[in-house]
Length: 543
Figure 1 (tube, rainbow, N blue to C red):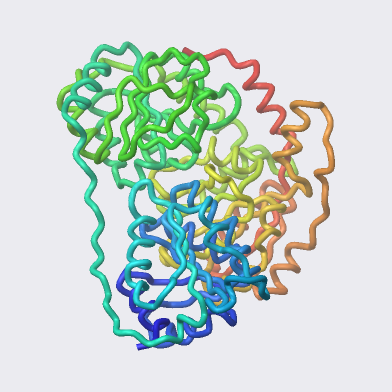
Figure 2: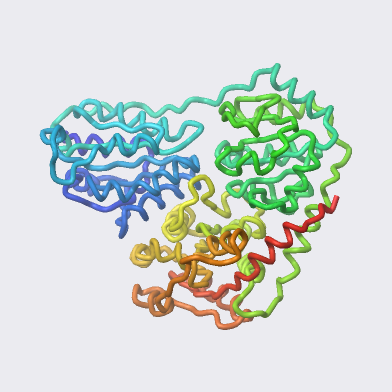
């Protein structure tokens, strides 16, 4: 059997459903072998889009998403999406073709040291040096990608090896089981919780990766401890839950920040430092912190651990709850009430361009609770993270480790492939949208009926927000846009333009009901950005 065919058999053995990518000369044998495979190849229009699709697939399923490119520029185009997956701890396996081994030792057409290039942005990067190691390299790439903390891995496959013959030897798929938390650490954490006056939980994306959200719900309920979530852990506890405080992550003194100010003990559960810098929520460095995760805590001067409970998060929470004394009541309920009041204030505002609060209210109104939003990066991300209510995990996907623009549209395509029966909406700014807008063609060709909601302001709005806050003037952030309605129609999608606040809700309903790829151009009033900054700067904590 040809080495390329063995490689594809190894991918099938790993349960790969889709490979996102672009064919090239150096992966011709793999592409041919895929024709006889159960794996579906999703031809994209740019390798970055392919990597983002694999990234979001990994976030949603917990299984490694796979992307494929050719050598040189094809491989370099994967870099941003691979780095995003690795820093956001989404399992992903990237594969790139390479020139034959007979010319890797010298300067040669399109040849780069791809393993060296991918090593800093992956957990594991390897070149297939001889055909007989294909099963081992493939098995290791998937095992490492899918082992906590999950992330990205990379395989380089020289084209001359792909043609060689070998006998297949497919390795069985085995994933390590999470370890049990040490009993003495459990007991000490329970003691700290019992002695605390105002404990608080900061829940991160690791709770979702470990599928421990129901255990977190039970723990918070039993212990009567309020929960703030990071941007990447939205929905990890239902917003309707009486212990839910909302999202932490704004680089300003928000309502949740008031909770950190008051807490004397902070339980960081499944929390990754890339989600929200510790110095932003623990500037005083005088609170006791309990680290509950499947991996040891990262070293940070504002993240000094009093107790580390490392092991299966589900079991850790159950064991601690068995020993800790529940609290009679928490004093942070006014924080939640204040945020809800703010969410409601502009829900029916008819100003135009449309205020961010109204856009989010209407979007939440038309979507079912298990529908999925893929949020891009920009000013809209801050509003969505703060105000879009989630009742289930992985229903609002936000990139906040690497925080790369351009993820929403390709990510929405992947989400629709994973959940074809759910409504999928990509929420993006006009800048982020145009970074990967070529994937509209991919969505239309595949028949993945997604809705792309563009918050249009003809500027890099988040940067303008920061420029105005720091310097009182803006610098080189303006641009022009195409006619998004005509642009959508040119791809065979349906385009809408919102021309009044009252139009947004019916347009959203029509787009979701159409079961087509739809692009909605919605002008946004980002003057609300500085108003929010001023409000947070003047905030007096309501507790």
